[in-house]
Amino acid sequence: MSFFRKLKDRLTRSSTKLDEGVAALVEAAPAPAPTPETAPAPEPAKPGLAARLAGAVTGRGAEPTRVLDDAMLAELEELLIGADMGVETSLRVAAAMAEGRFGRRVGASEVKAALAAEIARILEPVARPLRLKGLKPQVVLVCGVNGSGKTTTIGKLASQLRGAGKKVVIAAGDTFRAAAVEQLQVWGERAGVPVMTAPEGADPASLAFDALSRAEAEGADILLIDTAGRLQNRADLMAELEKIVRVLKKKDPTAPHDALLVLDATTGQNALSQVDIFRKVAGLTGLVMTKLDGTAKGGVLVALADRFGLPIHAIGVGEQIDDLQPFDPEEFAKALTGV
Image (tube, rainbow, N blue to C red):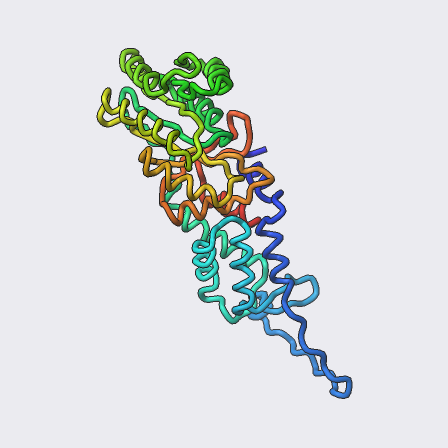
């Protein structure tokens, strides 16, 4: 199964998926007022060729349509908010979709296509792969809360970068969780990439400094630094992340060259506060969205792009090595809306 088909399958398994919601919304048009029994039934008007070609009428086998009015627009906005797109972004998307269509009849397929086009327009500017800058090494700091898929994402990135001919070193900076170090070591073995570790409870900033020294000495192209999973509302944990950044700059004033935040799609609107805080502490340069599975609505990615404009480097829908792919806005928009 292709990545796009897998993504579409995962997204459209959500109980609030947009495609079913839009179809239900269109079919929810109020029934016309009944004609009095005494009044003769009017002769049905024969639609012209242009109307039939435009699909402006509903006949046998045709798609149901509904007038796009204020009531339908309000329902559409609620549907987008329910898909985790956030209030402000949902209002903008719905308004853009209604432009040129307000007051006329529309079918579900037209609504979904218009939504997909508007969502893709918002996402297009942020769909940028991780750029290799030709530095030796390019230091990539990877952040995220516990359970976001951060460690797995590092392993996948390391494997893909090595497959592209790059010399990669991983620093297992989550020194407070033994399982994270072991998990990275497994991925390092799979990818043929060395993993630097430190004793449990050791200072992660010291490990990051040593890892940068080793990467420089060995002529590595990429240094991927894992960090401890931390909640954005824990000041002490965020202070440790700030310390890692400060220590790296003592070795290389330009480091880290990239600071990625790995986000779990199932967190919904909480992802917005995560980006806001991590951006201030670590100077985020890009995002990776994971776990776009059957429980994720996916719309939060649109809200993130609309609000922050940070590059979205990749998305993941599973645990396999090929389940982390460059972000394609058009394919994502189609998968999200069921086009």
